[in-house]
Image (cartoon, rainbow, N blue to C red; front, side):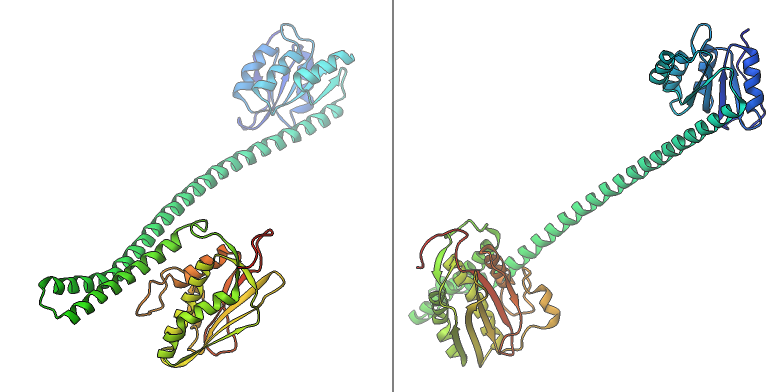
Length: 401
């Protein structure tokens, strides 16, 4: 006889329940007596009658009889897989043929089965294990939901962090552009002022011939300064592939050519310029760029000394693959608080002149040659810049020039 689905033990309504589905009242009563002391129970007399409960109630374990009119236990449990996937399914059957169990395992994914007549203790143990499995699945689902929520929060934080980083990068770019613009304006304003004044005097036509020559020399000198500033900016910006190709070149020739260019400047300032070439072989380089490197380092040394002192240009072998060049001076050296920013662009350290690009250019060129540059004491008491260069190309290349 079919009866309406009903709750058979008083309990909290949202407490997970064991659902009994059997068309035989006596069988339902026996199951009720075995389970009601431990579990909240729901009952239905058929699969069709039990389906709405799967949609509305928290079902922990389903116990269904296989032989029911209209819908078999396996058919009902297969539908329960879709409606209540975590509910653990137990099949009651008096027919234990292998074919029926295989169908139940594949179609209904049953947790276990109980053959009639069943023992209450056996049933309780099976329901208890099924309940533990249901709790584990529910807890896993809860943890997964928490994890998804945390992942969403993390993704939101990550997106916000990326947005802030992008804004910071953009702000830094604008700040860098502002520094470059300010530096260009500062460095070009003075030469332009000189050019304007001298050009105005020339335009008036009231200058003596000797004064006109000095005015023209001043204009050309300032144009040269402006050209030098712009060349430094372009050198920092352009890629390494631009300009002359790398080749094998005599380190001795390079050092002596730079030393010759500075000899008169040093004599005028009472500075003794010395060279010590322990290594005079070839290195793989772009000679014009490496000349610029040594020129920048020597100019810094001259400015640091002012009047009087010593500058040492030295070469040596760093190892079997690299040579090292050192530019040392007897000046005041590098203040400890400046060492961390020595090679940063636009760092002038309160020098009255200069763009703050000299050492940045040195670092860029040396690293593009496959070497490195650093500052460390060496023999003289002032600053010393060390830079390495490879002795040869990555593969066999040109002979020494």
